[in-house]
Image 1 (tube, helix red, strand yellow):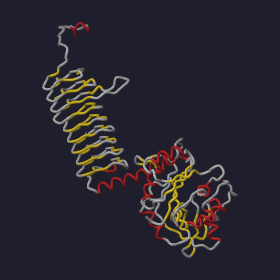
Image 2 (cartoon, rainbow, N blue to C red; image 1 turned 90 degrees about the vertical axis):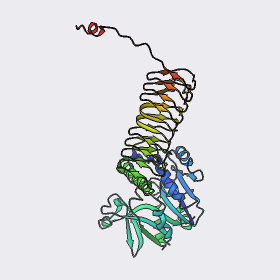
Image 3 (spheres, rainbow, N blue to C red; image 1 turned 180 degrees about the horizontal axis):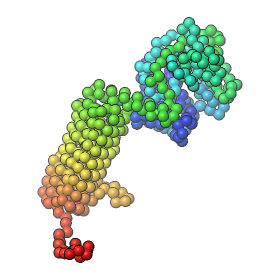
Image 4 (cartoon, one colour; image 1 turned 135 degrees about the vertical axis):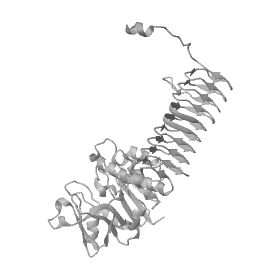
Length: 432
């Protein structure tokens, strides 16, 4: 690992998100914003600290699920608000400290390399924008940062500066140790600003270098509009990654794939599909407008217009249009259309007819349906769980199976005798 510590500032409320949820917990491609930046940070350093305050318990609980070794520091945002206040109780292990923002989910380990390669007391990230409105301006002279001025305090000439502060900094550790205790909140917001460290360091003649970064990787998310724009970028990255690994995607811009999804072997994903959670798709086809949620699909074809709900395992199976599978294991099965298979275990050679339903819920508990090998289930069949259907069984169309066990080799049929009431139509409608 590099000789650098990373601090992620994730204490803010994010009021512009118009949401009761902490800003850094809003999802992009199935994971919180803070997850993405934490994951990339751990590719750079084994010393990662996250500073939290607003909804701290929820933030810590969510991120700890995936990153149990990350350190959390709770900011005293009442007595020490602001970015400088967030650094008050941070102790870094390494000689250089990279300070990131938790609302920049598009940062990658490669994009952070420039901070590691630059030898200066402080490295300040900058954008070069055609329209810098709303940003603090960065004055650069002779290749060094001269000062930062907020837009509201900028002169007419300073407003013409196109270099703006991107909000990411790399400090030598001794600089933070020296200047953080000297910060003052004597300003309009009564906050402690990390940018004041840069001013004090510059006044003391230290070397502050600018680092030009691209807006895509360092884009901040401050609103639901920003969230949607970042989602587009993240989805492009995920899809491009898997297409580079050999996955065929038809109209990829219409396909949504979450962060935890894995593809193996030869796979095809058709247009308008959604694949989420920790799904594994191996040597399979996901046909148009299908949804796969947190499930395993191996050597199978799904859809079109199928819904595979969480905790399903589907192998060597055909799932057709308008079939819903939930928490079920299917191996070597054909379920061509219009069926619900929930809490089921179905073995190879079995055919599920159209309109088949596993009645798995009695209003209080859910029960399991177990179907053996080479079972032929006729159309419009209801299987009232708990039920076991042994191998080599035929179930006639229109049957409701209520027996706890259907023995091997049998035919099951449950129908009322068909009757004809002659002339009923004419009597009912008063016609001859």
